[in-house]
Length: 103
Image 1: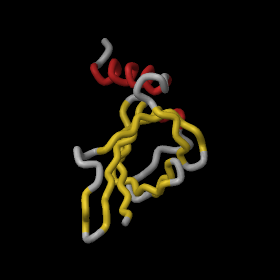
Image 2 (image 1 turned 45 degrees about the vertical axis):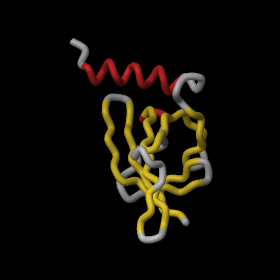
Image 3 (image 1 turned 120 degrees about the horizontal axis):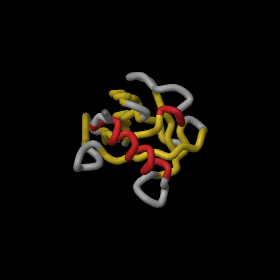
Image 4 (image 1 turned 120 degrees about the vertical axis):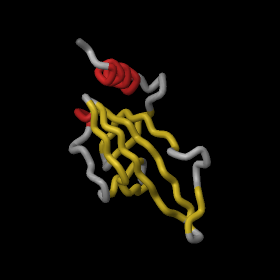
């Protein structure tokens, strides 16, 4: 029997393969990869101690990554550095919540 997570993973894999749909082609740590990336919060940026905080959520196929990142690791996406906050792998997909501070 196929689980709901397996159905969702199959749908996500199809979406990630189609940059004309919801996926974007980005450069992640120097390698091109299809991802879905969007702000975590409704307000794209928040002010924290005088700095702006952006929190983003990225979904990718695990097979497309050199390695699944871990919390605290730094990722570079299109020349912007993000710190990994949370990693949730499921089926063939990984969800990565990351943040960056900037002024």
